Image (cartoon, rainbow, N blue to C red; front, side, top):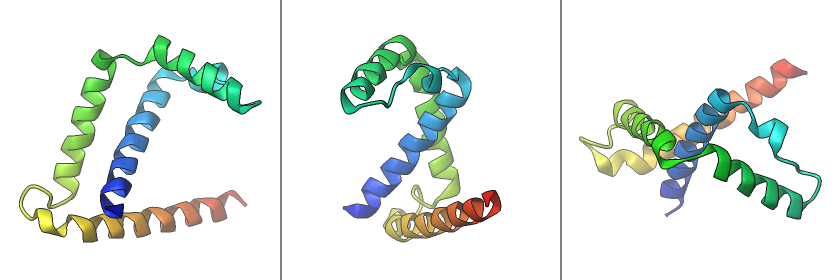
Length: 102
């Protein structure tokens, strides 16, 4: 369902941002001059910088944060509403961040 995809997107985005902050080479390596370049250079970057050993602690931490920040372990039926609230909160923060940058 939509809320499940949204939650997965948030977790994946958090993992990627954490990994990018630590690795720091994505912007220098990946070209976005065209779709073919993006696919080729992204694949190359992933092959060189992302391994299961590196991702395992990031995924574990993301799941730990999910279990702490939500009631998914005790009241999983509330997860759709929590995902929607999280989405609204994220959208609000994004709008505020954009306003501050102007």
